[in-house]
Length: 252
Image (cartoon, rainbow, N blue to C red; front, side, top):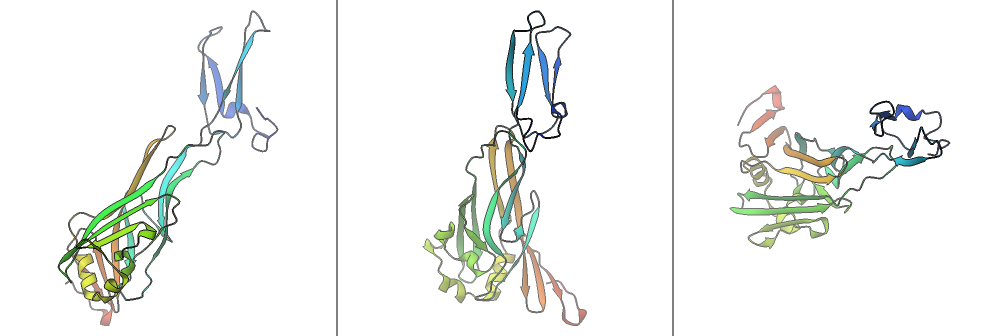
């Protein structure tokens, strides 16, 4: 309707919307969308027998979901696949991670903004810590935009309600002091000998325009430890060790 707008300038409306009568002189017509548009389009119907009799309607383009996404700091999680992260086991070490950001990338051209509901990431998992012979109950719940952080180092196992994370052993929250007292070997063993169910991060939401939108990724851990790199996929007990010393390779 605003043909002089920055978006509409130089464009032809029939490149975006066409109106085709069902037959010559018919009282019905089919409106077809050919592409996304950024200005409202007006459709006018005029009577052949009485040109002064007419009616109008407007056509809008609702913003649509291009793709869902999940990032944790600089980690770009892989939708429908495995996301590899390197876990830092040393006390005081800073592993990869950062602010948890997720939601939907939306189309940039539209006349009506999409209504995206509140999206939540809700993860519950149980780790077995052989160092004490106890289960670690892990629960993470984050709403999009909370600004909560997650790091793949010892802090992952610390109770941190301010970042949406509850971590308990025997019904008691796990403190920073406890985590720092754990032996590195016990942490590696815990990650390698996890239950068969993989750790999944995911969420879903619904919009009228795009229907149900899902995002899911499986976390795979790589542990760097001095002269060896140990690869472990959550949910598997197999261990692959690549030794850098003298070019030797072995499996343990």
